[in-house]
Amino acid sequence: MHDRSIEERLRSTLRSEADALPLTITAEELDRRLSLRRRDRMNRRFGLLAAGVAAIAVTGVFALAVGPFRGPDVAATPQPTALPSVQLPSPNPTSGPPMRGSSPLGAVGQAVLIRAIGDDPRRPDAFEVSLYDPRLVMSQAIASIPGSVLPEDGWLDGGEGAPLVSTSGYLAIPFTRGPNEDDRYDAIAIVDLFAPAAEPWLIDRYRHPRWGPTEQLAVNATDSEETRTATIVPRSIDPSTSEPGVIVGQWSSEADVRFLATKDSVSGYLGMDGTFTAATDLPAIYQRTGRERPAGVDGHTLGLACDSGQPGECFLIESSALGDPEGTWWRESDGTRHADHLWAADGRGVVMLLVTGNVDDRLVVQLVHAATPDARSTVATFELPGWSLPTVLGVSEERTPGIPTLTAVGDSGRVLAFVLEDGTVRTQDGTSWFAGWADDPEPYDPD
Image (cartoon, rainbow, N blue to C red; front, side, top):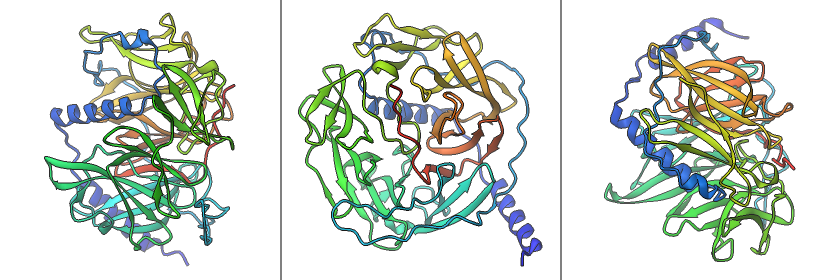
């Protein structure tokens, strides 16, 4: 029997606690977070940007608070109810590669959310893991991970990146550890959602975890930025994934290819033996969040560049795989600021987040599909907190290229909204990390 009075009291309590959370942020904190994001994006670059882009001086600070334009209000999201039909897969005993079973955590349109519990955001008491369906506005608890998975000398600094979950239920939590703030290093805790209280696997001096199609984890060594592969069962890290001089990119979903890569600014891929092969027709790319789209058709890339004006104008440059400096320029209209972008599923158009104005202390944001630089359509217009630096966290699928079925939007990995393909917006409070979809989106292969 469903007791509505208990549910209403619980909702009232949760709203009261949420209203008491401080939402103020200083200019210094915005600068710090912007610097962390830019550093993170630079570290994650696929290495395919044109020489012409690199030559443009990026000297201006990206300003999100623009003119006092007004936009449509977005209704508050109803409180989620429980998902009635989602079942977690049963873990199977494994030997060799860590295949966790045939069943994923849920559907590709369901988001895995991680929320830190406790008064100290640097040392949470627990990590609450849940499955959220933005279309049905339903939620289901998956696991509660004790905060003790972080060692005594570990903490969350805020710039490590969001936790990332595999389809079978392994969670990678990036964190910082060391004896003090001046003597610190990156680390990753690997936790099994089916055994949340079990001893985690701590990987020291690695960062930027990326799950692959066989439940292996790509990680970057902090001392060299070299990409290595961590295998969960048994717990081991390969010494290297490539030959010297190769910059490793995203996982491939093809059986005989491991990673996309570049060498001497030439795009290509790495075979299972680590050998680099140059190519403009790149193999299919494995997607865990739907953001793994480093290049479009024929290996074309997108680079964000900003001039040094006051305020500086930012725009996209599309370049060929050969680094052609005379690429296509994707400019914005006056009063519009570029917040984020990724290729559409066809590798020809671009999905963009644009800041078009502000209303009081909130940003007016548009999710836009640009089929060409001059042909654009708005998927949705919505508002986000004025302190946010909007970014696309994930895309579930695109039945129509450039019109995602579900788009997760947030700041520093924390979800602020889910945008449905019909323009409906499910706002979020920004207290949860987006850790990926409950199942993998389709591989990205625009050619």
